[in-house]
Amino acid sequence: QGRPRVLSGIQPTSGSFHLGNYLGAVRQWVDLQESNDAFYMVVDLHAITVPQDPAVLRENARVSVAQLLGAGLDPERCTLFIQSHVPEHAQLAWVMNCLTGFGEAARMTQFKDKSAKQGNESTSVGLFTYPILQIADILLYQADAVPVGEDQRQHLELTRDLAERFNTRYRPTFTLPKPYILKATAKILDLQDPTAKMSKSASSAKGLVNLLDDPKVSAKKFKSAVTDTGTVVSYDEQEKPGVSNLLQIHSALSGQSIEQLVAHFEGRMYGALKTELAELFAEWVLPFQERTRGYLDDPAELDRVLAVGAEKARAVASETLATVYDRIGF
Ligand code: ADP
Ligand code: NA
Image (cartoon, rainbow, N blue to C red; front, top):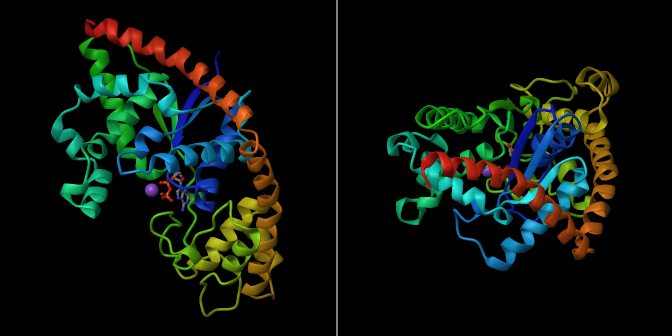
């Protein structure tokens, strides 16, 4: 086809995406589907590395897909699917597990962080091998680039190491994927604690803007965002992280540059920025919610989209897996 292939995934762990998920990842996926052969998936296999309620997991996967569609992913322009619908992910993951050194896997800092929080006894082996499943996700589709946040860089390096190892041990089989680190500027901070990123698991309720909440609730959160004791709206990540975060969000939603915004708010105080931001967000989020609801209210159409996506994904994944099995001696 000639277009670079990209692949990315998002966990279905929350009913609603938050503003950080949207501006940091999903919105960029929407842009990337135009000039790339893009594969996007909701990674429910990854989600069960920690306990999940079955009914909630199933519902959250569908709500995630509906939000991706609501945000602008177009199943005609990209391949959108749920990971567990494509069994080749788990099959290739086993092969890659057997190619990975135990020590090599143990060096993954994200596992060290997460397992330290959970404690040894409640940490699953699945969480330990999570990066290997990620590697299978990527290599199955022969992805050229993987749009991810900076925190995933180490996993991408392991992906390249293992692809090279397989290619050397057997025969050239896998494309070596390049990281495509998503714009650092897209790091959205907690509205109540602008020293930390906005996060489903770590942010307080008031610090987290959920896309599916009533915009009135979100407006209150913008208006009570923590800033500083100054009065001048200006961009300074060190001294004014709260105001800078609000400017960052405004810029992302309005398309205006930070310089334009600083000029626009000259002589006005933080309240003006907060009020305008709340309105801007509502203008964007209402149509988003309507589109998302449209998919949730039409389960047959959502099923159809997911069936088409799984079929398109499996066409590629099954070919890669067949080649891999052949080279291994199966
Ligand atoms: P959370 O940290 O809330 O659990 P996830 O880890 O599920 O969110 O992230 C899903 C995607 O959203 C990832 O690509 C991640 O980089 C992006 N993301 C999450 N939080 C933010 C944020 N505060 N700012 C920018 N991007 C974010
Ligand atoms: Na996370």
